[in-house]
Image (tube, rainbow, N blue to C red; front, side, top):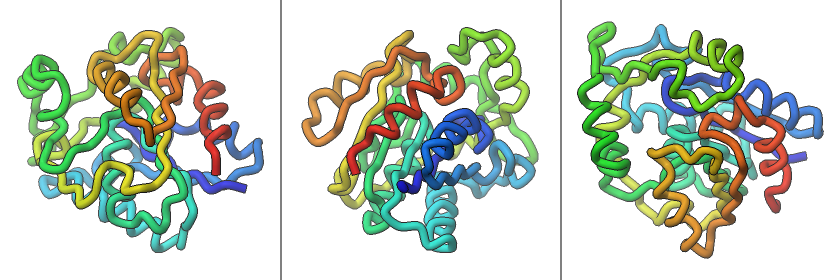
Length: 237
């Protein structure tokens, strides 16, 4: 039995893992899904002090409280950044780091500093203030890259704003991304998400990362849970 700890993307919560978790549990594995403070199921906790360091501390705190070890730590999209930071700090608890269509973190770089400049500039113009906190509002339903209209609408109804500090504050990595732990990168290729597309080529040139393309859109954990679960279950442990 493996233990999976799954982190969501921006604007999303633990609920996004519902369909993948069903498949992992059916296969006999232990699973944990964490919402981030101020987002998703914890949206009521939104406050100006929330940034990646806060989310990092929260996640490590959960692993320590539950005494989780030898885990497969999975981050979808934005969640892959927090998963990478956790692996940087507490590699002894991580058996494998899995990134689903996210970026490869670099010390001293913010998300806005990593993603394509035109996309970052557009998102900066969308910043709003909610409860005294600068946030990025979630995108319209048509941008979710989910073909099923009912699933897309259901997903969109549950999205919440995301603290913009998570995008603007440079991160601190003390080791190369992955910190020596085995890594898998699951790339969504049909269609390719403009924010992540450039990372696919970079990852394929990194010999220490298992590159696993799947024919699904960026929000594959919702739109293609069978493909995602299959890839997670095939991770060598």
